[in-house]
Length: 124
Image (cartoon, rainbow, N blue to C red):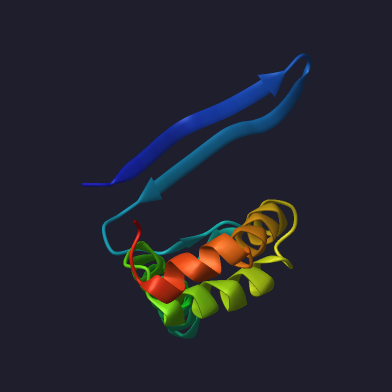
């Protein structure tokens, strides 16, 4: 039994076909690339599987400092303020959203009022 199957799939825009008579059958455990099926190529399957497993791990590894910094900031830990400042500087290169968040974070964290708050270690 196929997980995905199409028979004579097509998409027409006006008088022109973008897709015409596409037949596709994907079985459980098969890998399909966007440019076409990978049939019998074990090396390509191994590479795609490895990359597919590495990407979530890399994203998690990049998110961990932000999570740790966020928890520390909520607990008003002085080290967390410095960690988030460093992460905010790095976020400046992620144009446009990262830049906006980075600038705002730096602006908030360098205020004298914020420094006093973290130095006292309490939110009161």
